[in-house]
Image (cartoon, rainbow, N blue to C red):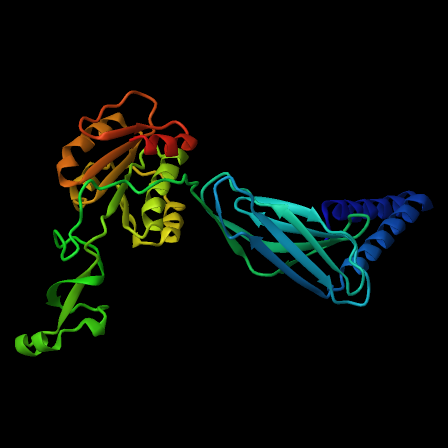
Length: 359
């Protein structure tokens, strides 16, 4: 493939040939011949396909926003000749990173690394990886694709928090409602079988008596649920970080946690903080308020609202009777009031652990 300089050289040589023959001067013909010889040599330089073993790895593949992540490129020359003029081009999100590779001796290996952007949350595609070989004059180049594309997941930052106390002792012999999270500890009731139920929980005597397959519903009655409601209107990274901190604190202690936004549920898990972080990494700005999400949230345990809207902070007081404890993390700029609710005004993530512990 000719570069712009190569096309210019070809066009200039053609013009010089035409001018030399038309005017009868040998000098332009000599110059044109030199240009064509240079083009032929450049094509001969880049035409052979180099025998390369190329591997690019992203490390780590999941990283908190702002932390370091790098791509490590390993290139091995399997051919019998040394290679020069190699350049790697790797697409990272919407941008392209270019790195020049040192000379590769025969059977030699080179390893280079380059940083990956982690300023913004989300999935960042890395690749495809292109190796470009150009001649020393820059007249021609060959571009070949190597390896597979990868993905870097930039997740929210978190602060270390304690699980919010529910304020109530949970009965160890049974749930307070059917909303208790399913588990393997305490028998709650019998219900009809649904697809996906563990067949080991089938109650065969009741199934034979009723003619319907019945299963035992087991629950973890002693574990309070933490419900995190994230207001995604005017979404800021601080709001996502605060919501992630609360949810990870609950999941990391083995408690059930539920994360929802005005647009719907985000994650529901117990003791798996990785799921929470992966899902929150992909949350974007929304248009729906959280009033309906608060109304539909299952009661019991702790409710934590993260919002930048002072009006939503005030409305959360209306649901406080359904929960053992209600906390509002307010990341807005104006004043907010939430009667009967623990209000935490937050301007920086580093403040959250201190304010959280003092409430």
